[in-house]
Length: 582
Image (tube, rainbow, N blue to C red; front, side, top):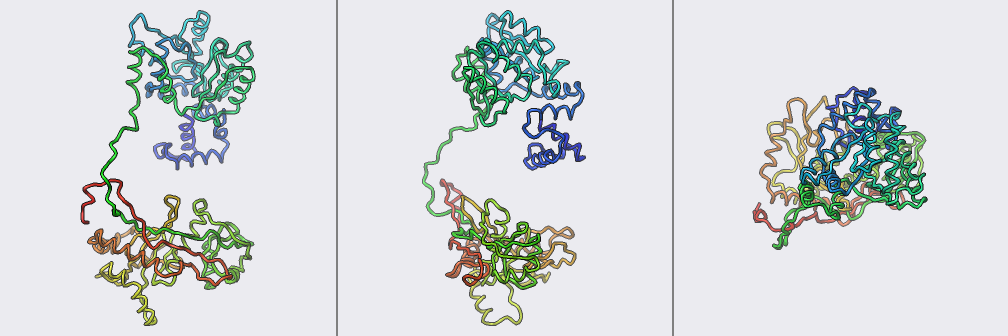
């Protein structure tokens, strides 16, 4: 109910329709909670008065609150826990139930339970609300059990307790019944938060008697650490007075009921009725395959294990705050090769210390030791290592790094007019295996369109199974002229270049059909060869991959050591599908 009330208040304040939000979606939950954290409309989350304040804020009039509850109750049906409780009442094992709920589920379930017994064995509970408290008084005085007492009223009552002022005081007659029952019996409190002061005051009044809760006091909660301070204080006082106090942890009412039914000797008709309403088990027996799996790998991943990567970077402090794009612009202007991440007035940097300081002198840059990198925790560290990894893989290889917000990539470098012939020959030798795997040129122009294309891979830095991996996926980059492009250029990416998986607003992707035909006939065997060729290209050479290539003592470089072999997966059992040749 609190979540629903907050959603209604949020929609009114933001002029949104409630149909536009999903209160079960964590994203919307965080947005709504953030709104209330920044405003003083309601008490803080978890405050004992939060429910009452939210209910009154949405429905100021008592008749509207009654209507809201009646509409909600109309959708309710007894759960497994209600059926167990009803079975215990019908069997004479529970004498008195106090509830702050307005719904009739306990008494409805008890009526159904009684119908399973002979008429002479049926026990019909007396239901008393705050506008019929005399019934509760009669049951107490005459020991006429069972009793279902509704401390906050029944949904059909004119007087029900929801708001802060209504919850401040308990009906005197109903309070007397609750206190006297506590003096005669033990008490089991299930699913009660202890938010309203009136009931907590009545429970404290029980402790003022000579022998409070003679058969013990058991407070059930999902976690003992989540009890409100008022509850903890009450239980501590009770224990100090010699009451047998226990806090029992139980996840749900249904789970508690399932545990109770195991040790309760219900009459057979009641037991069969209760167990017929059990939820469908989520765990069912399965036959474990006993046929030995195939020994060779079935799946090959396009991912390389990163055996070692940087754990620290250079820390540089600035006298004024600057964003990452602003810092990169200064470095580019001074032709300083460095990889950076801005954190307020601090930078995490891979590069030559003196060159970086000279380029960033307008920002008052100064060295400040080193900064630890935790990419699993800090997004800026993940971004820094992601940028550095792509630059390191492209360095000294015929590859062009493209760093974009939508994802980084590496593309085959197209030979340019005026390039050194020896360099062109060396690059062709490096790319020979990759060219053979593709079975077609790695660069060229799209037929009929004339747009330049380059084979390449998208690159991802991801964590799986507590290890970091360099994932890559082959794709074909096409440079499509887009003079009206609004996507800002980066040092490694022209503004008019086709983005990875881009959707063109007008006219679609002009090279889309060609790209699909380009890849359509490449099956598993071709993919395996392409993945193998890319993995050899990325891990070739004896030295680890370095983002900058610094001499010792001149700064901190980003050094990555990658496994020469991609990840593999074996099937857990054999299947006829694995007999396919492709």
